[in-house]
Image (cartoon, rainbow, N blue to C red; front, side, top):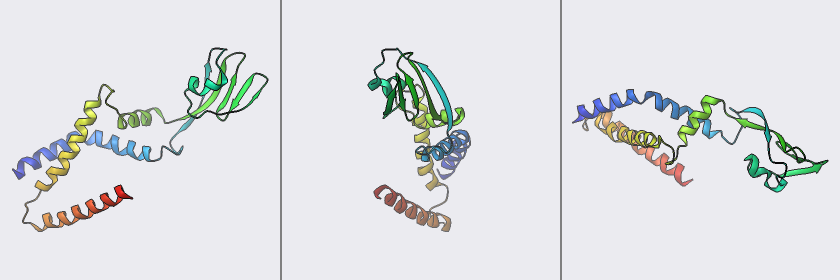
Length: 165
């Protein structure tokens, strides 16, 4: 039984190397999503209907919490740019991740409505398999296994502390 778990653990680990690297990198990027460390500025020009109310500008441009700072000469100014109410032209800047990092983080944050969500579930189940199968990597009577249990206990305590605080 131990040998079977070791073989499954090994080959599933080799198979999932790429996806684990993607999740590791995108997880690091997501930690800093409240900062602009990896983001690049991009100027966007968008044509909106001339009758777009200034109050609905954030919704029309898909900018959360957009606040118009001032209106002057038919132009509404906001933190990211401006909107000409006469022509319907909006010019503003957005900060976006580079294409590859953006795709990786979208994969990391997948929801059940996405077509490949089952792959995320498979990956999560595979990680749970790694957790369980790691206990069959060494015989229970060996000193390595006993040391492993101490590290497991320490890791569980740390996890509980991180969850609670």
